[in-house]
Structure formats: structure tokens, C-alpha cells
Length: 67
Image (cartoon, rainbow, N blue to C red; front, side, top):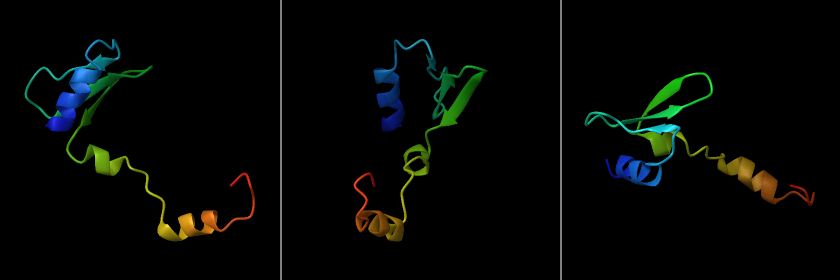
């Protein structure tokens, strides 16, 4: 609920953000094709995009300056 309150407060005036009309734990974003509704339950955990530890170790050991 706290996450949803923060989203509502920060995006209140954004025309692409649609606040929930009820007490549901959802918010809607107006994408180019159609509005998409997201549920905040587990939203942060699902969107962390964590890299596996072995991949991080491999990247850190690279001698390539770009990596």
C-alpha cells in the first residue's frame, strides 16, 4: 500500500498515469497502444532484474574496459 501511495503522489499530474478508482492495489499506465493495469503486490521484487552472482563475478573479472 505504501508503494502505491508513493506512485500516486509522484505521478499524480502525469497524464499517462491513471490512479486506481477503488481501494484496489493497482495502478494503470497509458501505453501507446492501450492502458495497462499493474498490481503492486510483489511489483518491486518482480522488476529487480537481478543478475546471477556468477555472471557478476565474470563481468568483474573482465580485462575489457568497456565491460
